Every structure is written in structure tokens, then in C-alpha cells.
Image 1 (tube, rainbow, N blue to C red):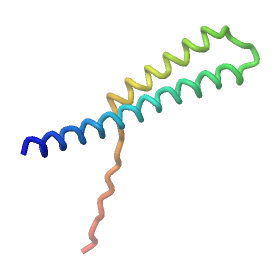
Image 2 (tube, rainbow, N blue to C red; image 1 turned 60 degrees about the horizontal axis):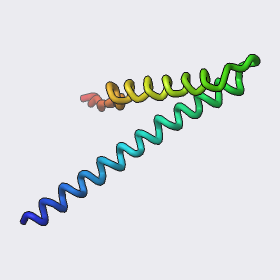
Image 3 (tube, rainbow, N blue to C red; image 1 turned 45 degrees about the vertical axis):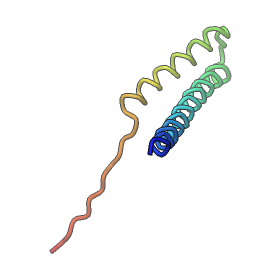
Image 4 (tube, rainbow, N blue to C red; image 1 turned 45 degrees about the horizontal axis):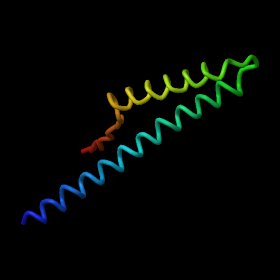
Length: 82
């Protein structure tokens, strides 16, 4: 009985750690995309440390928004015409 409960707890912890890793990868990708956009799109370039700082700020802001509002679901209801 104890081994069964421990197995359930460990499997739930593994699933939660995978979800957290996916979120961290998502935040890093958003930061990298921002850094690349800031580096290559403007005609005048910024300093490298300014570009990295902006990328970090964007990643942190996205993480905060994703934590507060993780998903928005639109629930579609079917109306019966009777």
C-alpha cells in the first residue's frame, strides 16, 4: 500500500517537473526571439548588454503573465432550436 502511494506521488512529481521544464523552455525561446528581433530589425544597433537586458525583461514579463493568466478558453455552447 505504501509503495503504491509512493509510486503515484513520484509519477505526479515527474509530470509536474516536465510541465515546469516546458514552461522554462518557452520563456527562454521568447527571450531569444526578442533578442534576435532587437538585434537585426532596427537600422541602428543597441549595445549587446542592452539587448540581453531587454530579452531578460521580456522573458520575465511573459512568465508573470503566463502565471497569472495561463490560458484563455472560449467555451462554445450549442443552442437547441426547439
